[in-house]
Amino acid sequence: MTTRPPPLAHATTLALLAALAAGAQTSARAAQPVRVCTLPGSPSAALDQAVARAVLKTAGVDATFVARGIDDDGGDDGISAHELSAALGRDCDVVAGFPRSSIADASGTQMVFSQGYLRSGYVSVTLRHAHAAPAADGKETIAATYSSPSQLIAVQQKNARFDLENTSALTVEALAKGRAQRAIVWYPAVVAYQRAHPGARFDVAAAPSPYADWNLVFAAGAAMRPLQTRIDAALAQLQGDGRLAAITRGWTLPPDAMASSARSPAPARATLRTATAAWPVMRAARGGMAPMIVKVSASTGGAAPSFDQEQVAHGQHLYADSCAKCHGAQLEGINAPALSGPAFAPAANSHLTIGGIYQYMSTNMPADRPGKMSDQDYADLMAFLLYTNGYDASSAKLTSDAALGSTTPLNAGPRH
Image 1 (tube, one colour):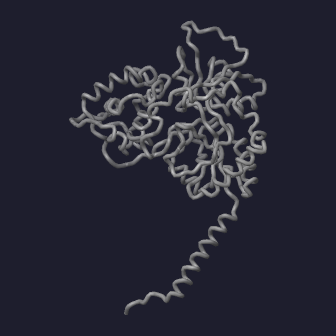
Image 2: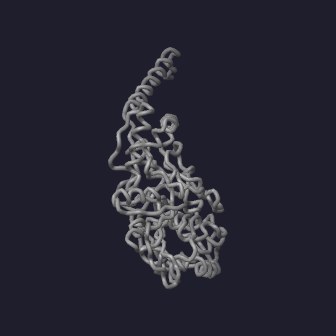
Image 3: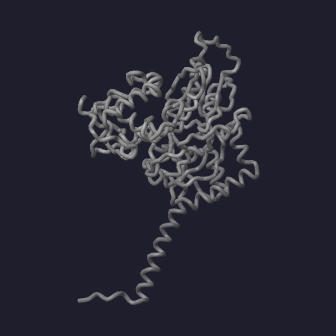
């Protein structure tokens, strides 16, 4: 028996009922308070919540603040775009205090962003009235936050040695406790430290660099675009009547630190060449916050890409010239991580992929010339790292595309 299509009136009724049901679901979700998260460990979390309360109240939007925050698992390994998207759907609707810059704007993700509500960023900080004797070799000790723009800016300084700390809070403390003569650090961490230690006095200056200039914004999933439009309108209103300036007072960069990084040339590879995620999303560090490269989830399939012995030899030469001063002549790590052994390439269950390592290296390294090598040089360096960690050379040459596209976990190779 042939099933007949429903009469037109019946079809129209079904469509109307479906539309009403969808409208009811949308209205029910819209009637719920907007869930707001901040980034874990961020020194500006209190400010971000204060701005969010004022903005959403002005926009006529009910809000509730999620205590747990984004990816608040106590780790210090960052948050990927995939994890951020999942958290936005699961834990909250909007993130307050998301940092963006012209270099790392996260435009490769599926998120939407408000206009900035606080210009901030990385600054050069010294301890007021400090009279430390110069080092015998004449070098200045600079504290910086490991694996963040702070480190990239610090290594551009001349005649310096480095004290690399795990969080921005510890970077400020290194200066306050006399372990460093200067710090390149995320400015909200300086404000937070001074509030916790009222006797601490610092002089803050600009850190001219394309990596220094950032804005704090609201970030949300693409489905929240109408909310972001209302947030922008509310921010404009708060800015116009002076309320935004009142809320952010005390967190605003000092005049001496407002020098525009536009005077510094932008790096040649300002935009990441992969859709994995934009650099940064966030480093989720206890006691401090610093934007950084996202972590990469490992895959369990696939073999390591091939490389030849000629690349290994050239990669070793490049490494000695550009990498050994931080990572050690034997890849053992000095003021940067070791690039061999179980800490870098464990026997199994690595959380890093070969493509993820290549992506980070080719965009952010060498730290004093990030992204300035050729694609083939980076591929040859990757071949040297693979060989050093137990992978065998073959007759096929490793290309940049093959290295970038590899989803193989970086475990110790068969020779180990």
